[in-house]
Length: 471
Ligand code: SAH
Ligand code: SF4
Ligand code: F3S
Image (cartoon, rainbow, N blue to C red):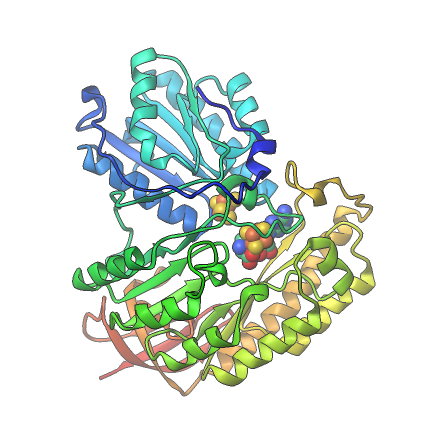
């Protein structure tokens, strides 16, 4: 039993070395071999990739994945803590789980991911959700089997969460969701401590994987037939800072590019760490895709300062324009928070202004959600929720106008698309992504799944394009 502690999670010990170790195979309790498991993931791409590792470890132990929760003997909820509604989804689900446990007392239920790293959540699990069998955190996925075994042996709720800087574990088994596109972690954790954000508390300190480990993973993926890798981190632009004196994301992009994998993407970029050399690397390497997700959060310098974002809107704009100028055909998307404590109508209008200036290809917009233990959760917040909701609607209207415009600009052009499968809305069509990350529903006579093909764009919708495969 080990419980999370938010004060420890906040500490950053610069002298403490990050331990880089290899995954150690531990055998699961033999009563579970051959049983069915179900994993549900709630969070960001890094969380999704963690889910793929959880599945990899379980499958490696002889358990069988099922998509049907009802038939599972083991259910794991891989949670997200970024906003209250992420919490609500998981707690909402717990009612159903409780009923399932009543009918089938042998069912094992575990919670992991970012919520598991929160003290208050674990308190609630211990007091209200006693039927949750085990909890592990983001720092000990590699130890999951031991956590489960301990629960089986003791027959008691087992909670094992560490609030530590974090280490780097290599060679964990992974069961990837796609055969063509793969996530590759390059940097874990975050040291930015934006005042609203829980991630530095749930994911530990910023720590890079060794470049040779990343490159050999990409080489292996290429051999296995993967067409695309997405390099992942809460802030990929900080890559290497903790590990090397002169090796950055720019160097890594160039080296990963040399593997000749067809497509390389990277998310997310913090504007603060974005150097000219990185822009050059993106524009020089043909297989580095022209797509940048560059969260701005607000257009008001006063709010940006309160958020601890470390840039002004002018600095953001300079960077934004440089990327637009240098990277041919680039798409730039962003994240925006409305209703940050003390945000006035004028502050909000500055956000609308910057959206009008940048004309983003897309934007993810959120209402500020106070997170446990973060500085922003302690700020006075007088804006009524109805005003925040109204601001969000105004913002969304504007943002959609520009994503529409950006989609319309693609009509008549031929785009290279990586086709990932059948279209979700219409299974007589295929779906894929352009180099600049636009979703396209594609008409084709022949099966083009898993291929990179030329597609002529015929019509633009708000969030997707329609096109025809050109032989
Ligand atoms: N590492 C990424 C962001 C990860 S979280 C970055 O720095 O860009 C994704 C987005 O969720 C953030 O960009 C932010 O817009 C939003 N977000 C984070 N914390 C939030 C909070 N407390 N309330 C509302 N939105 C939040
Ligand atoms: Fe959160 Fe800021 Fe780190 Fe992004 S950079 S994960 S918003 S603290
Ligand atoms: Fe959520 Fe944790 Fe990702 S809080 S957004 S799952 S890092």
